[in-house]
Structure formats: structure tokens, C-alpha cells
Length: 345
Figure 1: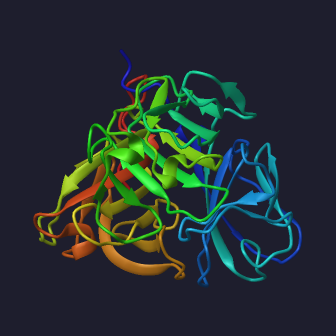
Figure 2: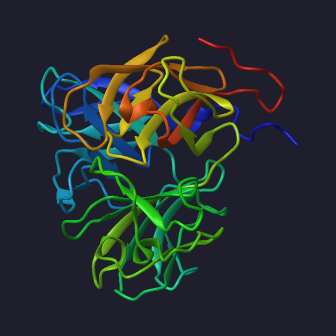
């Protein structure tokens, strides 16, 4: 069996940069028509802007905010064959401001999914193990929602769209039955509650929800971003901090293009880094998924040909005895399906 089924990860995930002009512009170079675009201003502080093809071009969410979904016709105006177009606004197109945009490919137009107790609308990519799910809660415990990925999920991010709520993150490496959870919009350590993901591991077709308001309030609408690990392309795991500048090494099986890390044991930021903002080691350019600050140079780590390694003693990233979760996507698999190894940078 081949090491990976994805030799070119940038066909499914890619990072691009652009500078705002407070007018209309098309952002190109993504390499595909994205279904999920996550934008953050780099040179000034500002909210994260997340838009997806399932909710539509006028709908945006902010990972650093509990606010309900906002609508604005001047944010992403279209998802295009090589990127996306934006209008005149100060959220993701402020004149002279530099931006980073992370882009994921799902499955294009959403389809109805009746695998769960709650019918969902799903855009899924079974090759890359990713789907965007929209559903309406019914307030009942022990419900299931179809996700369309085709394999058991390793990570779920859920946000209530119709009213204020926290972003709930379930992560299999943190708890195999998803009884523990984190909030993407906050620095807090993991919580524990049976009624969030129903203390039930996702299957290859559905994930479970309880009757918590953040995941299943009656008549409220939700978006779920669903991920299943794909060898050589994505990894969702944990590592233990050692409190040493010669820090923990994390094997992913690929050269990372994007890594997000959070301390699950204690309070800590959600660190977001990518290989295009940091083209050589150590990687330091950071924005925080839960925060508005501009990009800053923060605690270093190395991006390697087959993983990443902490080079700091920061409590948010490498505190002795702490457990950290991460999600990572590949720039290149460690070995392609034809046996060609990647190179370190």
C-alpha cells in the first residue's frame, strides 16, 4: 500500500497572502475553488473572518468571537476557480493591510445527508478527510448528525450560527469519546460534559451531540467543520511538553504547511503558523485563533520534513507535564506514493 494517497497536498489545502485595497479584488493562487476560507489581518489587529460555501458568500463567522453569524455582501463575494473575490470592507480588505488566507477544499455544493437523526447539508471531500456540515438542532440528547467524510472523525469544530455561542472543539486524541472539549474562541483549559458530543465517538458516517446549547439547541442553526486524519496529508494528535528549549518533537509523517497548537491541560493561546509566512526555521510568525492581535514573532519551533519540534520553554507551548493538542496539514508528504522522499527546508 502506498505511503499516501495525496502526493500534492496543495490541491486540498493552501495558504495565500494579499494586501487590501478597500475595493473589489480577486485573490488568486489558491490552485482550486475553496469551500472554506479563513482570513486574518497580519499587519494590524482585527477579527478572524471565516466563510464557507455551504453557508454562502454573505455569511461570516469569527473564530475569536462568540457572536452569531454575520452577513455582509462585501466580504467574500464569490468562491472562484483559483481562489475567491472580496469587496470593499475593513474586515478582510482594509487598504494597505496585509492578510493571510488559509483555504480548504471540501466537496463543492452541499448535499442533503440523512445518515443521522438530524438531517444535515454536507460538502465533503472523502479523499482529504474534510467536510463542512450545516444542521438545525432539535434540543434532544443523544442525537446524531451525518458528516459525509466516510471515515471516523478525529476532530470537530462546531459553531452555533443563529445566536451567540462558543466555538466547541472535540479532538479524538484528547478524548476518544469526545467527552472533553475546548473552546476555540477562548484560552481556557479543556472542559468535560456528556451533553456536548454525547460522550460518544464519531463513526464513519455520523457524529453525536447531546442537548448542550453550543451544539444542539432547539431550532438553532450550526456549522461543523469535520476532519478525519489522512496519512501524509493531515494529523490530529497530542504531545507532552518537556519545559526544555530542546523541546518535544512531534512526528506528523509530512512536512507541515499549517499547524495549530493549544494547551489542553491549562489556559493557553491557540497558536496558528504556516510554512509560507515562515520560510525557514525557526518558525515564529504567529496569530492566535482566539485573538485579534496582529501577527507577531512569538516562541520558536522548527518545521521539519516529517513533523515539528518545540524550541522554547513557553508555558503555552512546551510546559513540562502539560498536554497539547494540534491539527496539522501537509506541504509535502514525507514519502510520495511513488517513494520519493520530501526534503527538509
